[in-house]
Image 1 (tube, rainbow, N blue to C red):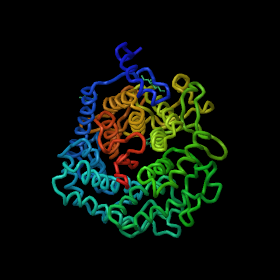
Image 2: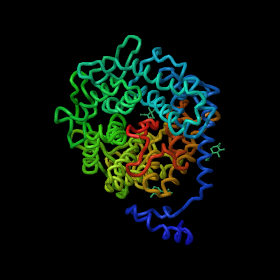
Image 3: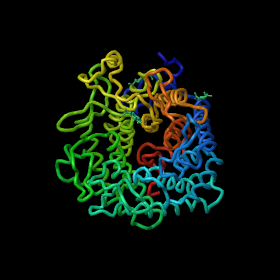
Image 4: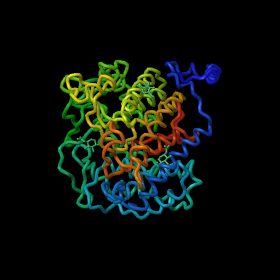
Length: 512
Ligand SMILES: *[C@@H]1O[C@H](CO)[C@@H](O)[C@H](O)[C@H]1NC(C)=O
Ligand SMILES: *[C@@H]1O[C@H](CO)[C@@H](O)[C@H](O)[C@H]1NC(C)=O
Ligand SMILES: *[C@@H]1O[C@H](CO)[C@@H](O)[C@H](O)[C@H]1NC(C)=O
């Protein structure tokens, strides 16, 4: 029992606010934390951010990412300084003036017309375009006190426009469905005949924002034209359940080529952006919301799944060829946050409740492992349990398909939405537990490294890579859940002034 009689009294005193959340409180939901304790936790996340930032600046800046084991660097994201740009909105929110200044100084100098590598339209949009537009929205707005030079704030938008102009040829196809893998010097592409659901359907927020801020509607039109094929799926076989669509789209005509449905990587942020576009502008994007509602209802009906040894757990299965595939991924764990956001914005308690079940399911993958971090992917198909994981499966309800942890944010991200919408302290505790586990397992002398096996003491081998989303997402959500209220925080109901892109960059909503 973790409820002391004192905190029980306190909770009874708060009965009014408790009844606003009619699902059962877990016991430790009765715990109230003092402001100084939350402040100390927020400061501990700042310390971790600073540690990673210092290592990146010392060994890798202005390259894309630090190699945190060898203290080298990599340029896996076009060589434009991905970690710096991805860190901007987090540095702003943390009030880290030195980091903000260094990043603004760098962004002015990037030449987006030059790179030696193939450019991913999706990755470049969510990390660079999203990072710069968010920096602009924050520094123009509620964080204006952090930007010493107005010209550097304006440069964020000017550079965003330059990047949009470099990338927009991607949409120049017979259907308007873009190529994802681009050669920006020759305006070429990888010759693919199809594009994926997530990489096609996770552009519209950033490209629409770019139009709304510049007054040039070309970017919005291009991304919304591509999106139109996803909202009106053809042929009908591409939509096996209302709102749930296949994974791959033919570039020549915008038709789906399959009926493989999931919320896993490859599909994930398409569903995420349907409801986020409605948050961004409920007038223009009502039809996106309608598609999200259909998808959410079909997901509850057809994809929810419960492992035989622990039937109280809920995860989302995938669907293909008339069958469920009983496996899921760390990437999929944004799902709880998406249901909670949709539920609060649309005032639909059943979506919030289902989102909280998904949040519990993702927590269950974290709190059963030796490190306290969940695996990259797992399964619960009784016919596929690996012989060396039988005991673990019986206890935990899942077996690990891929036990690595790649500094991913999705589990902490959904805990954050759960906390902001319910006010239940248990979700803060879960963020704190996860953050401490990541800090204890992945930290190196210069930053944070991906690890090979979350169910081995110490996490197994450290991989020599630090994805830029460590700065953009893990650090941001872990900080925000403990930080005081602010205009960029996720709010209950329809009060959001910002909406987070899939890389956790807060974008100002259109109607404020
Ligand atoms: C572990 O996760 C479950 C959700 O499945 C939760 O109910 C429980 O409180 C968690 N345990 C701890 C120690 O956080
Ligand atoms: C396991 O997941 C990591 C992180 O996403 C990935 O880099 C690695 O290739 C995966 N391993 C296998 C065997 O699929
Ligand atoms: C993170 O790790 C560092 C280095 O071991 C340690 O000093 C710090 O207290 C840790 N933070 C938390 C919250 O555990």
